Image 1 (cartoon, rainbow, N blue to C red):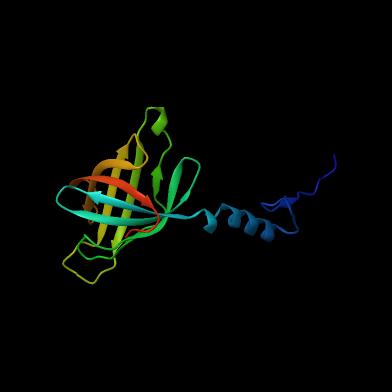
Image 2 (cartoon, rainbow, N blue to C red):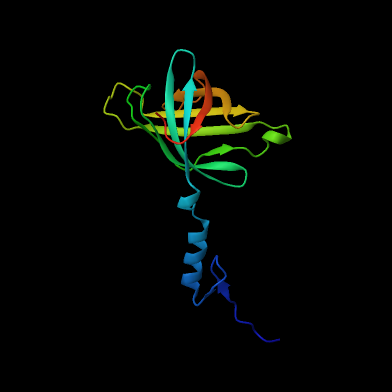
Length: 156
């Protein structure tokens, strides 16, 4: 049997000449593409408080991958930075299983009397409205909430 040389190609089908270039092409193709990113404005409300959350996401097959975002007001210690890498999952919402959301944020403001982290979790059979709980500094079940997408684009 003859040994065959393994050929590698980039995402566009171009021949890549060495292993390092092939590895870089694969890693580059796996990154969220900037042109796919979108911004949307969400509102979290528990009846007593409301805060606006601007999310930057990129679509995946059955989810939105969070690139980042901010909570500008309505929450002690604002602004807060949304951590990248978490999902709004639409995987099974149409198949009898709920969609889910999980977001985490880190306080950027200087008020040290405010918590340092926020975790929001929720589920829904819709893609723009979730119910669940949120909490601070490692807790996620302290307060009930409704979390809804107000519009595509930046918050007012």
